[in-house]
Amino acid sequence: MKIATWNVNSIRSRIDHVTNWLRQHSIDVLCVQETKVTDADFPRSPFEELGYHLEISGQKSYNGVALISRSRSAPGTVSPLTQVSRGFAAVLGDSVADLDEQKRVITGVLDDVRIVNLYVPNGSSIDSDKYIYKLRWLAVLHDYLTALRNESPNLLVCGDFNIALEDRDIHDPKNREKQVMATEAEREALRKVLAIGLTDAFRKFTAEGGHFSWWDYRTGGFQRNRAGGLTITTCRQV
Image 1 (cartoon, rainbow, N blue to C red):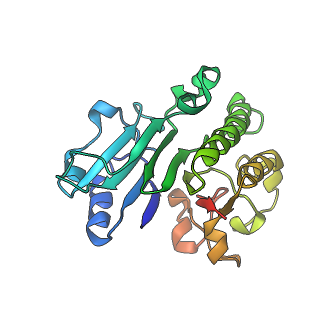
Image 2 (image 1 turned 120 degrees about the vertical axis):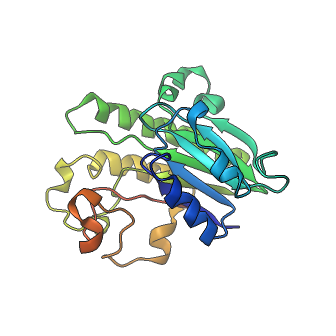
Image 3 (image 1 turned 180 degrees about the vertical axis):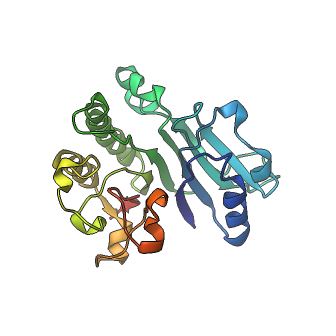
């Protein structure tokens, strides 16, 4: 089983990049974040023509997540994923339903693996309401994943976490404790999530520094291998 994750920063703007990549790689499930489009306007046909099925949860201009899975029947008909749900409230109830106004969570089961695709809030700045929102969101994420793991021991969590978990995840960590996406509170919240029985797969196979999974395209970060203040972290059960 091959599962990939990609923050596409607008699925409509990146549709050619994504479909061309899928033509070149045999992927069972592609988890995408920041689709930035309502469900009604999601570009379905290019994926369905390639034999993929879509499970989506989107909103206009912001956020949005999708599970793009290879159909095992006629293209675009029956999803190979089962037990699909969207948002925290589907698992934890209405007390957290307000967090689902932003479309950031989708999950489904392929064979015996529970796949969770996330787009964690950015947090904006440490003195903003968005930072407080992010910390609450991460606390609820812990409860959400704990509930899923109790039902599905084979749990894989992927997406854009908007957190640099360690200093080696940042090209230059100077003053990082004052920067959103690398504060101790965010790191501790993510460590608590990992502690339910998950491990960072990226660091499991690439332990040394100098390797990153996100670069700021606006500053030529990829060309200079200068990672920004966050990492896209893929987690899986230990």
